[in-house]
Length: 114
Image (cartoon, rainbow, N blue to C red; front, side):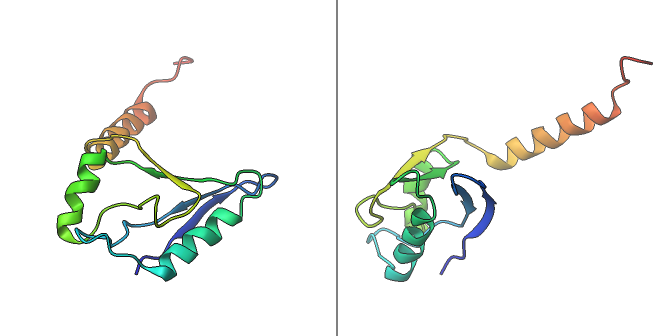
């Protein structure tokens, strides 16, 4: 089972950013009623928007390929009032490495007052 982590909650609208691993749907489109109920509970915390947007940083093809290993991504048939948006970041680890290099460069760059 996966354990979602609340990363942010907006004070007024109650919208949240919750991080989680992939669901274990696999090639057989397995369902987990407890996981579905948990995602619905997260959706219901935001009273301003009836539909929960699940953001997956991977390309959709990677999510499909992960089903062969027993994982995958949320099915909109199983997760009611949810939509899945893929961000198509091909290599999230490469993105992190590039971000860290840029951050390091910015920290070591001379300031304009020098």
